[in-house]
Image (cartoon, rainbow, N blue to C red; front, side, top):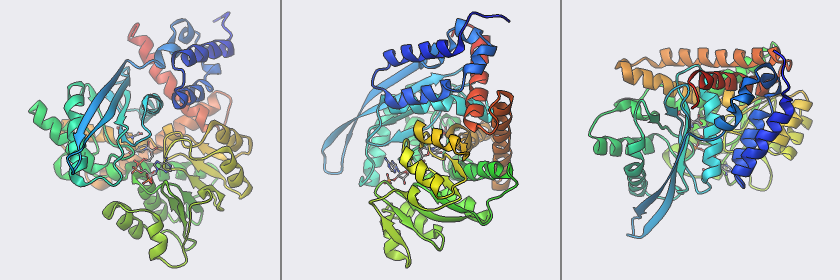
Length: 451
Ligand code: NDP
Ligand code: 2IT
């Protein structure tokens, strides 16, 4: 097909109009630029994406819900937080994506996460659209009762927008099995129905799926195994750095260790511990999951461990770096240190943890880079399995679900690798993930008419 369209120019123009419409939403614009940066050849091949304004439509949420969340602390003081749910795209299925409770949450953060989620969910091959939500609530230091009251207030407003065929939340930063329980309990009470499939990440005792808790971290390890396999290498004997010590970090460490890798550091937002003899995961779980404490306590309790709060975890030597904490936690300077120290592979457990400049450096230096929308898709993929199991009233064993997770991660890896190759950028998983995810969603949008 001949065309007068200049793809690079069209993409630039679309980015400019999206920027003008979303002034100051830096994280969202970063995510948009990162995806659109991979699309030149795609738009050249299919100019309909331009004439049908797919770039503008795909970057505008179908619906954005912002609401007041009033709650009372244990001393009777009243607090007001802001709640969000961005229902971004439902071309492939009902909105699906987590909830984040963290003081930094704002519309830009929720929109970047929702935007990423659209393409991540497409890569899983499951029939799920993209959405994200949360609140600028800080759970740190809050009692169990306070957390429960907050979750109840949050769900009292949000419940009307949710449902197993409409919008299905799950966890993210600050939202784990405990919070999912309180959220589900309040939904059940208001809606007066036991609608298991309206939320995922539930405790397997009452409707959850085995492996969902571990899925993001395990999935990341499986993805890294595939990446290393491309150069006939494997996890056994390699040295790993894992940032964070929450859900994703913990189960990444667990699976990497089971596969024979040596994890020598992990962190929280205050600092990191360096344990050259290998991270003792039982101790991390005791401190972070049982006591809800801080990672410096690890160094207090184990000999030969150093704690640092004045330098970056990425200054340590490693073969593989796995950022699993938060967005923009791995900067250009960090990338430089990792490359100088011989790091071969970086894969994102968190969403957008590496800055654009850091990614560019990795790619220029031949470091294999696995983007979050592919590498951390195991969490939402097992959420989809949870929805399936809820709908069919049939529960799978841990081993059965884990096997499915391994197959899904293998499939996502080969999709990214093959798509990158097909579009002339072999080894560029970022392009592969962006192109494969985008095409699936864009083609479905075209098929559904002007939506
Ligand atoms: P958790 O709340 O369980 O853990 C978050 C971890 O990251 C904690 O160790 C936390 O430390 C640290 N962290 C949070 N904010 C910052 C910050 N500003 N600077 C440094 N460290 C920080 O969340 P998850 O493990 O679930 O999520 C981690 C990442 O993985 C997020 O990017 C999330 O979006 C992504 N993700 C999560 C999935 C899931 O299924 N849960 C699925 C796919 C991606 P501290 O305790 O000090 O705050
Ligand atoms: O970023 C993510 O993929 C998640 N927080 C999990 C979403 C989900 O619906 O399981």
